[in-house]
Length: 113
Length: 115
Image (cartoon, rainbow over all chains, first blue to last red; front, side):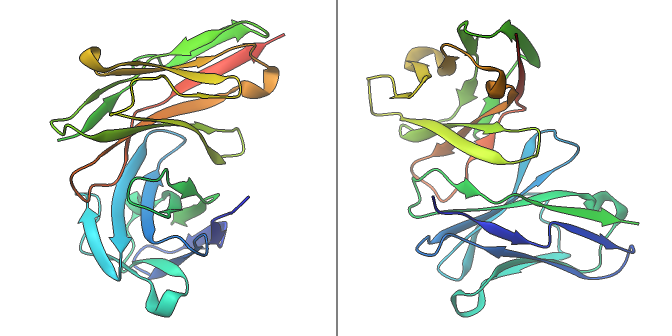
């Protein structure tokens, strides 16, 4: 079936550095999401994106976070600068419609040292 | 604000039996969409089944079915004839229908299916 791909699967960086997490959504999907999960706990919503715009963001989506999807390529989450508390698994998801169940990628494990 | 609550932290069952996992939600929206996902030991998140608030009939997909009790704001997941490979963490999620809000997840229920 259709898949959401996330690159890389694991990223290790030093605190204060910039990191970009890449997501290749399902090809015809229009709605994109990022979620954060710490230690297999609750999936916490960060941001959703449609038609080139952020539609909604949570309190976890700090000023250091940004998202974009230039010209239909990767949907990216950038964190600049990173902090220790940003260590988590970040899941990208996409859906065809607003009502559709988002399909998830396998996640990128971010370790901030 | 939308909220999803799963009170069962973990459940253990013997294979081939039926298990029910609870989920309650809060919303002021008259239209909403409910989803169940499972997260395997490898971390993969798999969509299982959905229930749209306007549909009265409980959804069924394979050996998954839902117990939708709208007056109680409850959407239980029922797994019949459980298998060892059903062992996973199960998440309930809700999306409101009349705004741009993304789905929100419950804390998850860890299911262990034993021989």
